[in-house]
Image (cartoon, rainbow, N blue to C red; front, side, top):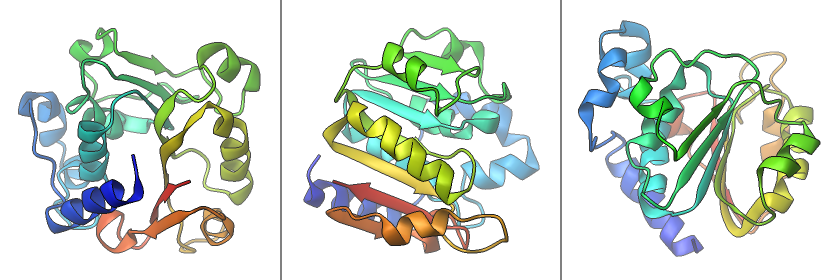
Length: 208
């Protein structure tokens, strides 16, 4: 993906930050949950990044990696748009994907690995080929140290035009230091889309 294509996807999503579901029934389990349906369906106007995940997946083929998948809302957003020639690897150290149906779990394109530490270099090497990842979403521990170590470890496995997503890049609560990463990350194209993508907590998009 080049920067002009990425800019268009960001702009289009900002204009209409709601998932256009291909299969609305995938999210039925979430619809009846008042707390999480606010996020997935962007009812508060501040969680448009789920729509961005959907739109990026619709426009990019290849391997998509999600580091951190608690509850499974990101999985739903990506899976609904996942192409036949794409795969989703979603990792965590806690097994809580409560909104994910067997239909998704049993799809051979989907790999839900909830015994996978994102900093386990040996397992990363065994699971992924170099320069194979098209999109990566870093959403684990909210510290500068964690996200910088993840980026260093995973970067060799990213394609040259890999789209990198990082949430919680604003300095909004004590203990969250991911904002330092966003300030320091020296990359060709960097976007802070906090206002519509993830209200005051922050969301960054990067293209090398």
